[in-house]
Amino acid sequence: MNVPIWPGSSSFIAASASFYGSNIGLRPTPFGYYDSDTVFKVEADKLADYCARSVGYPIMDVELQDINFWAAFEESTTKFTTMVNMYNAKDYILTLQGTTKNTNLSGREIQTNLGRTIQMAKSYGTEAGSGGTVDWKRGYVVTNGVSQSYDLNVLWANVSESGKRIEIKRVFHNEDPAIVRYFDPMSDTGRGSQAMLEGFGFGSYSPAVSFLVMPLYADLLRMQAIEMNDQIRKSSFTFEIQNNKVQLFPIPEKNVRVYFDYVLIDDRNNPLATPTGSISDLSNVPYDRIQFMDINDIGVQWIYEYALAVSKSMLGLVRGKYGTIPIPGADTTLNGADLIAQADATKLQLITDLKELLLSMGREMTVVAEAAIGTALQQQLAKVPSKIYIK
Image (cartoon, rainbow, N blue to C red; front, top):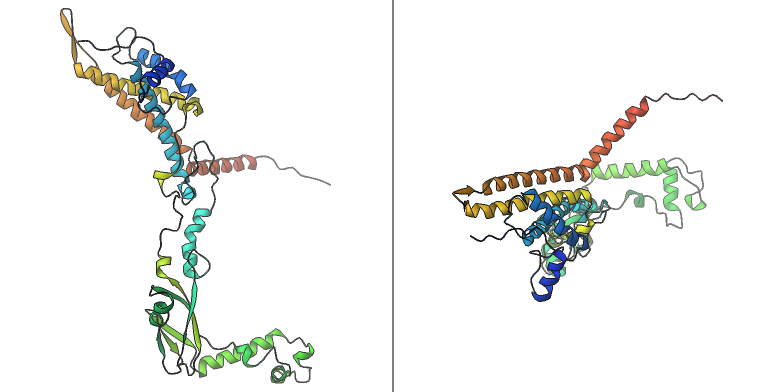
């Protein structure tokens, strides 16, 4: 049995030149994500030596080659950058949704804002008529002096909106304001103002056209009296609307335009409000792979430990294939299963530790921590004696 073993050294830079020079399409690492990273090139050979020594070299033969260690190095670096990017994307997804996905966000601080919250609130503004993302349109029907009911779908939607479904938001059907029924501010004769003055006992004064400033309560009382009279003694102006069929009260006695505001239901229900090419979810948040040279010592150490675990797993698979090997006078059992179990436990622990670290540094936990620090500072400052100032 001829099993390749670790020769004791490697040269990632020389391998890069060889692979890319004479073997076009091949690379030292499976994907080549970091083959051009200058720091990764230097650390690749150091990591290979570290992993080989950690599993017993030179006392024991190590049935792995340099490309196996380099593959473990690439996998570990990718795992680290993926987890960091994933937690960053999760933290800022509400801020990033709807923005362009053409800018790499790796290594950039994301400035949070209320844009997404306001965007979500605009749907309520549309219904309330106080803003939003859907246009309110205005139409009208002409009463005929006979009918009380008018089908707005037939009279307006089918004609002016090409049969599109509409939803009525507001109907302008009300009587004239009380103020115009007893006082005409555009009157040149002042008859309306004079009648109002006499009605409230101010007849001896000059009319409003002579720039007399009347008390506001006089206007309010007269308008209140007119409106109360209309409410009790007359059929008040109102309407009922069902399925865009409006019924007017009282029955219109002449041809007038009754205006109404409406929205197109297709516009209101359209979920595709953001432009094409925008960030929609975790799958297209533009976090690119972080290059190894940009990772600090905390991340580098995690990568080394994870690469060692991956190397142990690969070595365990190789040794598990053979199980035992003959030696003079006996057989020796290889520790493939032990290596795989150790590797799985180590990888699980490393991933758990990294998750907990990233969660503790997320926006939610950071706000909680800052609140706790602020409370503690207030408690400390409360114990500081207050000074008494005497002038």
